[in-house]
Image (cartoon, rainbow, N blue to C red; front, side, top):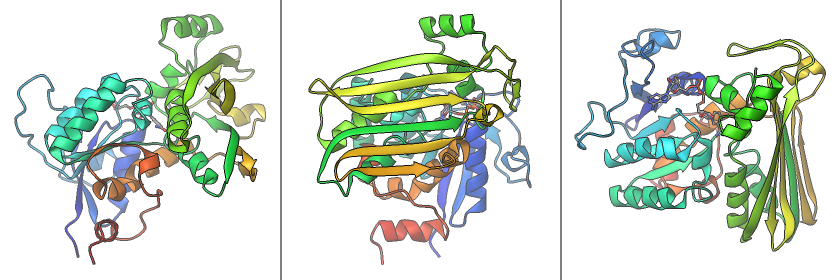
Length: 355
Ligand code: NAD
């Protein structure tokens, strides 16, 4: 038996808690530390907080990032970061982890391909990771899988690709306050419009990243990306653990993006996201159409569940990241994601080529 992989979970919201529970279910991998900024969570035993037995791991406030680079009390092989969506917010956290010599998986949407919107920060993270011999990956269900990694995998059997059109019609109810807020769920139409104008409501975070990553991997150069956002107004009352929506209020955001290559619309992504679409008879699903030689069409009904999918992607990519070359990586640069059904430390040995 190999030594188990040691994980620190940073951020224990809807997603981070689910990831921690998933790791507890697996063998050859364990949680050795947990950080959250919420005073309600700090000081609690992680196992008890997650609804199970005492684990001996106490949830701590995150390390301060503005002081000197002293060693942290807790040391692991990898930190899973589930705190925010934006590279600007998570980059200091990621850099601090990297300076401790630990690898990072982030589910911040913009970290799926930070070169798209924050090239300077991306280059810096890549450099610092290489200096410390560790790897950084941004992943999740979307961005991270459905509208980028899965699309790219489906182009594998193509001789030529002319156009990609894909849509994800999903249910936002598993997600916590961070996602609910950025999608404008539970606002009035006027609040939604002013939130969009102010930038508090952004719709889907990740189109810039998915389109640029797809293009990069295929060898296309994106000239521009056009995005459109409109409110999905509910006709019925909807309620999740995180939000209540009355009839006439906003249940989510219909968001589309088109990436142009040499003036032609080559990558079209459509993503109407709302809580509980089934209450108005809308079926969820993921649809990918590759137009080329040959055409390839994929239909997944219902959608790959976003909450479970995100937790699984973050945890399942741990061996790939620990076996990867140092630097800032994307899903397109790592081997295909797979579930972890056996001893994870043995899977890691195999990925590293150790017999
Ligand atoms: P959430 O609001 O339920 O949880 C966020 C947690 O992080 C909270 O417990 C909060 O206290 C904590 N936190 C925030 N900033 C922190 C900091 N600086 N230090 C320590 N703790 C901090 O959100 P969630 O649903 O768990 O999602 C987390 C993030 O992941 C969101 O930004 C969301 O948009 C993103 N996300 C990405 C994907 C994807 O597919 N890539 C999928 C789901 C969620």
